[in-house]
Amino acid sequence: MKNIINLIVASKENRQRIDTFVSIKESGLSRTRVKNLIIKKKLKLNNLIVENPSKKIFTGDIITLEIPEPEKASLKPYNFKLDILYEDDSLLVINKPAGIIMHPGAGNYDKTVVNALINYCNKNLSTIGDELRPGIVHRIDKDTSGLVVIAKNNLAHENLSLQFNKHTIKRVYQLLVWGKLRPQSGIIKTLIKRSSKNRQLMEVGTVKGKKAVTNYKTLKVFESDKTPTFSLVECELETGRTHQIRVHMSYKGNNILGDKKYKKKFKKFKNINPEFEKLLLGLERQFLHAKSIGFIHPTSKKQIEFSSFLPKELENILKMLRKLNK
Image (cartoon, rainbow, N blue to C red; front, side, top):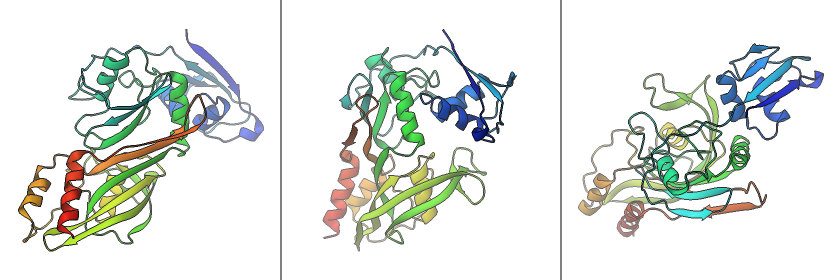
């Protein structure tokens, strides 16, 4: 059964964005959820359908929002063993390996994290998002590993989405980049937009784009006559834009090792250790790992945090670097 919400704009709410207004008035709805409903033509302003989430509203405007019954996902289960760090009635925290994408899309509809979740807990996933993304509150890239939180019901999904929108969820990544960051620690603040040259890539914008903030610090610099210079870096996100860390590192001129999309041509290092070179050439992913995640639990309201170790293929590269840089 669909739910209808009726709202009237007060004088103090004059000239607000319509998506912001609705999400504030209806605390159970995240702004992302409201945006999606507007795009799907579920909102009327003064009895006319509105499709622009940023439309301004004025005193006395009447807003009607229809919240339809959740769509039932028609997804195939995928027998893939999930690495589950935590689970309760509200959520799951999984450690995603590199090489698997989060949800179905063009070219891959049945071998994703979502399909594995369908196989694991079919009926216990949130259903308020896209039909092909039950449970998915946020994403990490296919060739990135690490921690992801999954919503098992709609209440948890809305609560976690609000925390993501308010940028209160703690997310820390570890990465290995070429060269040395200058300065070695700091904050990168830019706009990020879709690339004008390649729609599959993102880039730093000067005028257009969404605000992106990355806090970073260098944990260790590896310099040796047997290896190129690399830096082990830790990044904490204030925002969560598509490819944010990868774009920001590329912007600094210190691309992530193994990143096939955001890469530069590096000159061959003459004296490179053959064993280490073999490790580098054999790396089939980017050296980027979502190491920890912390948030307020949707039900208990307690702050919880989870951490994970680097995968073996990344740890092996660090071990060799430490050995050759003694």
